[in-house]
Length: 155
Ligand SMILES: CC(C)(COP(=O)(O)OP(=O)(O)OC[C@H]1O[C@@H](n2cnc3c(N)ncnc32)[C@H](O)[C@@H]1OP(=O)(O)O)[C@@H](O)C(=O)NCCC(=O)NCCS
Image (spheres, rainbow, N blue to C red):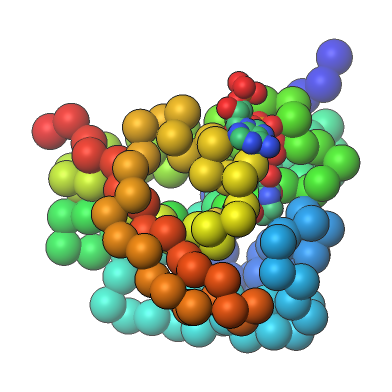
């Protein structure tokens, strides 16, 4: 039987997370060193409370998310699964944990941004009642638009 576990992660796991993002088939392909740099910046921010988790499938890390909490709201900064593990319901484990942390931190809402053509991710977010609050035109590296999405949380 497959063993699935969420494991708290931190700065020392950044290489692992960058590797997962690189293997996730993310809509915009980025070089691993660029991914790492962006993540490092996030982990060195002092103005947010950061939560990050790795998803372990049997003995291998296959997914992760990074959540930032500030001023009674949270932002899902990053979430990805190794492409070979898409379509197995594992994304729900990641997203539900990020939502549960946000609720525990008494956040009023959780926000994220998504490439407008990232239909898989947007489909998932819609399923969890995220709605579009803004459209940032031409804001993606490929010139596409970004959706800002929010989910209201129960108090
Ligand atoms: C986003 C990501 C984590 C989702 O994981 P996943 O395993 O692919 O998602 P799932 O197959 O479990 O889909 C979850 C839900 O999304 C919806 N969905 C899946 N594929 C979809 C598609 N092509 N179009 C619309 N909705 C879709 C479905 O509602 C599905 O739920 P269901 O299986 O109960 O019907 C994963 O695709 C990924 O790592 N992508 C690359 C990185 C990325 O884009 N991260 C998000 C940045 S905003």
